[in-house]
Length: 443
Image (cartoon, rainbow, N blue to C red):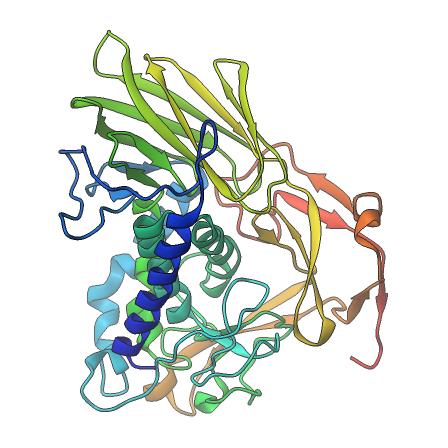
């Protein structure tokens, strides 16, 4: 799909989101979507009449700073391909790159049907939800940005939930740990990343699943750099009522103006999405207390969240809403958000099943053999080398059918005491889930 059509798709969804968002009633202590008719925030840009003001406002660059695993991810990106664009750009920007535009090339197709990791089966053309269909890295980062934009416009919780699903499941797996190579297509079920023809709409010499700079199509090497920085920029928002909102969760800190112009800093300490606990510590620029609203998202998957202030329970809230803590604040105030994560199953293509817990979709632990292949066949098209990954342990397992009420007793959750600075590897995975399964020889 051409970019202008993708924008139309986004606007249609935003329109529907604004309508449904505006219909939900208020509850005590909870703001579920009363439309904002007037913005009193003079510090951050919002729509002017006759346009309806957005419920959440983008903060300026530099206001939000990543911490923890998110900072490590961005450092790796800086030291990887993103920091070496001057050297890599000539390899990518040749006449095969759809980013040059104007040639009628149809490499970019829009997302249609969901898969368990939050993406869609779209290996160039619309291709359904079969977990062996491919999904492009460009799709991941562009859909993330669309969801971030729609979240600020509508305040709709489902957009933030979907954003986290892609960010925490699809995005880390589609690039190498040093951020110097990427897949063109990833599959929800991918057991062997080799140069072979697959059931994709386009195969690009069979290189689509291999890691490289030019494998598949070079557009993703140009486009992949926006994912993590824009995600960081959209962790926090200003609000029209002169407050702040934490709508997407990751370790970070933010400085912004609230109330009558008082500058405050929130420090967000968490190992989310691997931890259920998120702590927010406030520092203000004035000794006197300051009153402003603090918005917190409760994801749809959370059955009952607990918000505590300075060690005392303030409110319990069910999922799929935004809670507004409107009070007088002072430096040192600590807000703790507890988001209990329970196991649940979701059904997908032809009754296939995914195991999920919180925002994470879990995958079978498979041994990996990584091999760099020197490409003598077509280096101009697909690069001088690429990486293949083969399994070293069995992968053909099926889960035993279990009713939902037995999940908690049948699945054993194993947590590491410490979460690594970079937790996105098999060796450093902070959480494992153990369950009985059965080998299926016919697979």
